[in-house]
Amino acid sequence: MKLFVAIDLEGICAVVSERDADREGPAAELARRHMRADLDAVLAGCLAAGAGEVVVCDAHDDGRNLDAGGLPPQVMLVSGGGGRHSMMQGIGAGCDGALFVGYHARAGTEAAVLEHTWNYKVFSARFGDLEVGEFGLGALLAGHFGVPPLYVSGDDKTAAEVRALAPGVVTTTVKKGVTRLCAELCPPQEARERMRADAESAVRRRAEARPLVWNGRPLTLTFTRAEFCDRAASCPGAKRLDGRTLKIAGETYEEIYLSFLTCVRLSDLEG
Image (tube, rainbow, N blue to C red; front, side, top):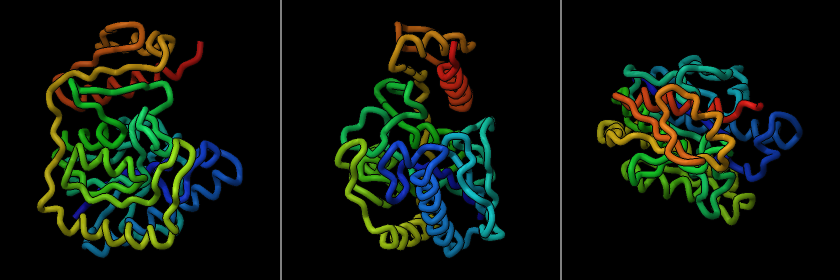
C-alpha cells in the first residue's frame, strides 16, 4: 500500500502566529519542530495500518521545512519548491490514499487560525457555487488520479470545511480558533496521540473512501487587489471577468490546477 501525505504548517499543533510561519527566527524553528512531531505521529499511524510506502510532500512555503534525517525507511520526502504539482508534488495514480497534515481553512473563514488560500493575494477560488481552500484544491487533484482523501489535521474550522466538502474524511482537531491569530491549543502530546490513532483508523478504512470528483465547472479565481489580477491575467487560457477576477477553464481538473498555480505565481511577481 502506497500513501501520499501533504504537510503544511499553519494547521500544526501550537502554531498561531505569522512568526511561526516565517523562514527564520526562534518561533519558526519551534514551529518546524512541532511540524516534524505531527508528521511523525501521522506516519506512525500509516505504518501501523500497513503502509509499505509513504510519499511526503513538504508543502509549506518553499518546501524546505523538514529534515529527512530519522524518517522511517518506507518514507520518501519531497523537499523544495517548483514542482509541477506544488503542494501536491508526488501524488499520482499509484497512490492508495492521500492524507493532509497541518492544513488550515480557506481565506476569509471567521476565527480560523492563519486562514488563507495558497497565498495572501487570493481572495477566493470557486467552481460554480463551490468555494474551496487548499484542502479542496489538493483533494480534487488527488481525485483526478483516482486517489481518495483519507485524513486531515488542523484547527476546528478546517475540520468543518473538510466535513462539508468530503464527509467521509477522518479529521483530527488540534486547536480551536478564537481569532485569526489566537487559538485554544490542545496539549501537543495528547493531540499527537489522537493524530496517530485517527490516521491509522483512516488508512484501515480506505476501502470505504471515494475520490473527490471535480464538478466540471471552470475555476473562478478572485484576488484581493486588481494589481495581483493584472499580473495573473497574462496566464494563457485565463479570461478576465473584472478588476480582481479571472476564469480558468480546462478539459481536466489537472489542467485547471496547473493554470491556477501559474496565476498564483504570476500574482507574486513584483514590477
